[in-house]
Length: 290
Ligand code: AMP
Ligand code: MN
Ligand code: MN
Ligand code: MN
Image 1 (spheres, protein in one colour):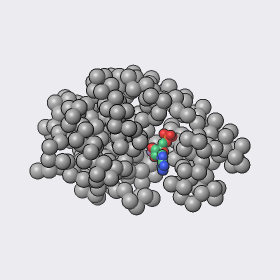
Image 2 (cartoon, helix red, strand yellow):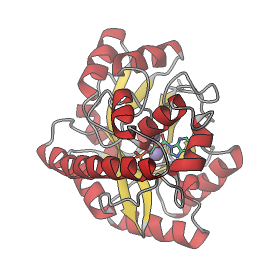
Image 3 (cartoon, helix red, strand yellow):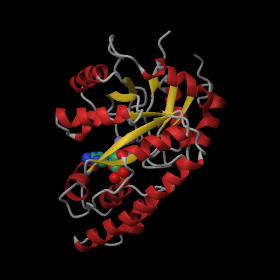
Image 4 (cartoon, protein in one colour):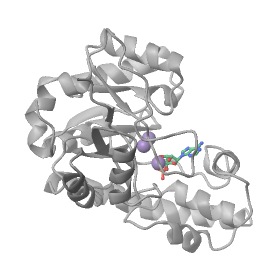
């Protein structure tokens, strides 16, 4: 039987709008068989989601999406099958939280210069968990009437070259993979087609990632086009990486993205749930049998 996997999504523990339990309930409604919650730089929603998954009889993979600065650019590394309370991982996350805090203050100062008042308080109102994200600033800016939707607000205020942009200083690729491994998980390059990398740069990233013990490549993503998915899946084969798939769902406000609404695994791809390492970390994954 073919199971339906969604191995990348967000809850109110980071910048999603559904609580961890609500994400699991919705995954069930969408006939997802195996769901991973992968909040940005946070494991705080995993316990609640795991309990809900146990109640509903759906398989749950505890995950995370780590912010990484690689080659002067922000990329995301997903960790799957992690122990949510591993102290090395939690120590690493503290460093990212400190940067998020100071970055938030700086974003607010810069926005103030651009005529947006009280942005820090405004963004914090939207942040339910320990994570203060650009998405929370985006929601406040929309509330303040500075843009009509999330796409426009990022374009006008929050991306490089715009008034509310602050350059990243996240984990190194090496640190992120080390923390994921320390917590017993598998490292995956998230939404690889979204970074706008040249082919050479992407290959460089994949080479370094594989060298450090990374195993997964999220070829199938809610943020990829069908063409990008095929190109990324072919590239994964070249580097002998397993492919992963995830919607990157953030909540029902975005009608174009749904939990579990993903393409099929290409016939010549190796999905990450067929890797030996996946089977090894099943101890942290509830309800999945080999
Ligand atoms: P942060 O990690 O705080 O820098 O926030 C990154 C998050 O902002 C991503 O995970 C997305 O959820 C969101 N995001 C980034 N760029 C865009 C965009 N162009 N449109 C909508 N959301 C975006
Ligand atoms: Mn996000
Ligand atoms: Mn991401
Ligand atoms: Mn994501």
